[in-house]
Image 1 (cartoon, rainbow, N blue to C red):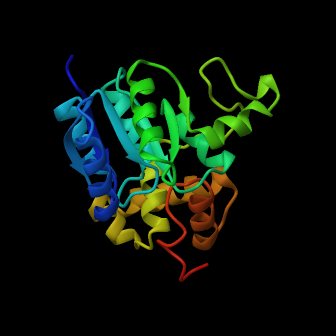
Image 2 (image 1 turned 180 degrees about the vertical axis):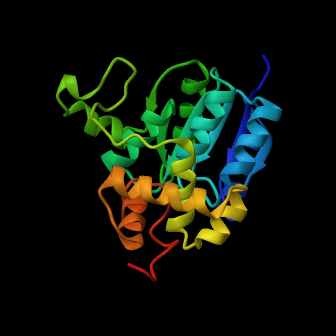
Image 3 (image 1 turned 90 degrees about the vertical axis):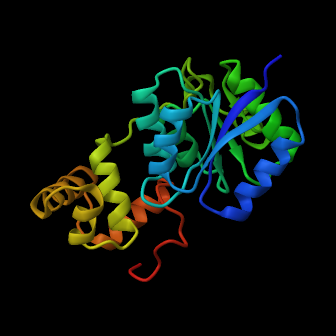
Length: 225
């Protein structure tokens, strides 16, 4: 039986190395690539086409949520297992809405991570025990048939999500334009649309929204809050 191929997308090297060593100990898995930011994760997923992508929810340049959307747009059959240190319902909803097939906390045991990868690879929805236990206490209508949390969320385009992340990471309009390869006026227009859609009218508010939605970690940008 061929091993399950896995792409590791995690920006913290020590954490990524830990996952690699853990998976290398199990003959059921083969790590075929490692990504340290969301853009690299998308490129490697398209190039390597792994069976499962282990994706950190908060990464630089392009967060795991938007990276997942872009991967699934290019590879609709891709299976993404989201990793996070946070178990807030908002994080889980954003991850499942983005198309992730599972959600695992970084604090869980190696056994749980391996089980999650196997389940997701088989096309099943997987939530680690702590989250699954909480979901059992939710009303049946809270989850849809795909295992996603129901609830109307503000719909942002892929480009708006990219601009939002860079704003929240403290990038000026000029830096954002250079990073995305677009004009300054286009960046300003995206910023205007973000503020209108989210009903938020300053950079600090956009940053707080990005943190609450799991787009960036709270440690990324604190100076303007």
